Length: 177
Image (cartoon, rainbow, N blue to C red; front, side, top):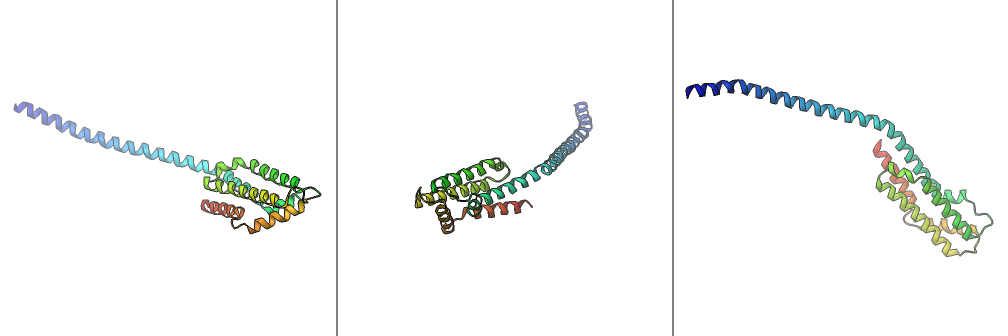
């Protein structure tokens, strides 16, 4: 019995330090591997941000230009109401807004979903103002009458969504930098 007990203690004296050394080495290596992985992820994010940041800024610029181009003041100055009917002018305005929006549709992947929704609502709001203005003056009225009515209705609108969208866009850019 005494011999078995001595053997047990001898094995324990050898095994216990070995187990402690093994566990210590294991924990150190595990931490080193985790830190190396975190470092690689950090470096990847830095490299990615150097490539993505200019593209994101360009997307913000394009969306600001979209909002500016579809604002009633700019839109009505660019598409002048020549000697056409309000109905034809109405269709030209809507086609121009649709074209501008579709041209910038891909920019939504670079901005927050909330900002994109605000920009989309701004376009819908303006389309609604143009449609309402066209209904108010009738199809056979001159295009200049529709132009004036759109400006009046836009000014009377409590929620000037284009202004709100532009302000939200500026706020989001401000958060990035």
